[in-house]
Image (cartoon, rainbow, N blue to C red; front, side, top):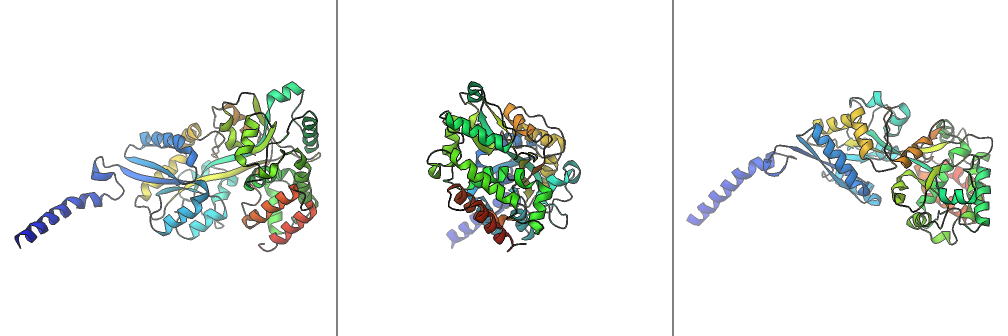
Length: 417
């Protein structure tokens, strides 16, 4: 009995000592500093160094708040985040996908309402707000960064062979033919991983054939059909480019494509701005140019709204989470983010931002004087992603005609209008 009483006394003492620890919620363990600790989820597992610097800069602004970056493997992010949110273990802050994917999590009650975040509606253009805006105008995230699409090219080889940047799609094909006749592999792109030939090549050049955002919405509404002459011409362009892909392109992965360009075994690579960092130490001079439009049309750029940041509606620290988002939406926060974002990711705030990387500035300059738009399927047609991906690959492999590919896309789109 005495031993039992001693045991009860000990347990009571431990319980008394533990109460302050549990009462701190998300604050640092043992209540050492009283800091509020927030977690941030993301699919950008490659950005730990850069984002950690960004969050350290914010902590100088808010010394009593620490934000810990906890990214997830990119392909697993959507599913992992959903499971965390459903299980009540989601991060306090998190990267938010644009358009339908983000809207779904807001409608499910997981993303917080960001509409009243200071600076959000005044410091971003309507087009940059739209990817994270609900039909009723509510905002479910603060725009963070966009990526661009273009053609990487080997300046050293261009100079050696007396080549110039093409100004039309017809010039581009002629350039590819010239390179091929001289024994070069013109393009590094392959199709083994499938996503890249759709996202970075086909959707990267599609606005050149069908037009920008004002035209895209007509396809979404059905006023224009995905098998009209312009869409057929876009699929035809993929067929025309196919002979200039690497030999055995069917088995060329995305990393293989990067290596082909980086080792000068391919002269050009249609890709996204996020790849620029891969070639920082390339043993040759390189640059980027906009994939040109067919003769008689204006060149447009796929400048894709890639990521935003939102807060967990169930966070125990909504005030601190919203204060961080307000900082990201400010000139100071955007400038700090620009200095710490990975090369090839561009702030979306409506202020001039000076980037330090020459190639990043070169990519960003491609937008000057041109229409820009998101990847075609993202705003309303994500159901078309997989079938369009396969159609592009089949056209490249000469297993499907451009007209048949476009007809299939229109039939698919009609299901979702």
